Image (tube, rainbow, N blue to C red):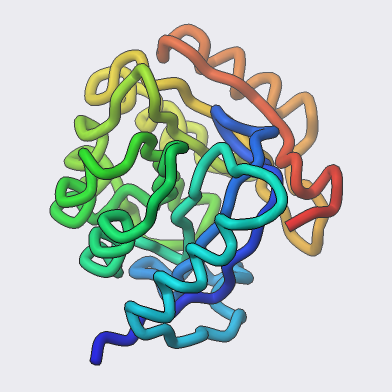
Length: 227
């Protein structure tokens, strides 16, 4: 029997990126292929669902007292469970859109789900921020999957990031995913932003000259203290 590890299923306000402020049903899959040292998602318990029980849990959550504007498939890295997601999206009856939040490193799995998901949200991982090996080669392959009319890229930025790496990222995005908007979000540790306003303003200013659309925003869920 197929077992799918899911940390949690819950309704909340989307706090990041292009669709911040919308009411989403979050399905948070457990496990990741990058394993950032500071990631708090790795500490969460995995609840193992059969496919039928996952279908039932999502259907139950969708049948709440108000409609959802999107289903957000997140993690961890949801593309580690691409086949389960494909089955889930065939099963559920949902008239809204489906958002896949990914670290942008698993091209083949993403290609499998591209037409089933209305929106891709890609995290461009700066190694100098997350203390992980460079993901530039994987990101370069992944970026052409993105669609300017619906998708977006998030870059978490910190006070001590490598600005050369940051500029390489923006130039790669401009070349490989033209028109896709970029959202800068502050790096956080212990619920505190680890970057000054002046620093993020400067990074934003430098980005305007390179990519078609770039925005600097706080994470709404931290401001409002919601999940």
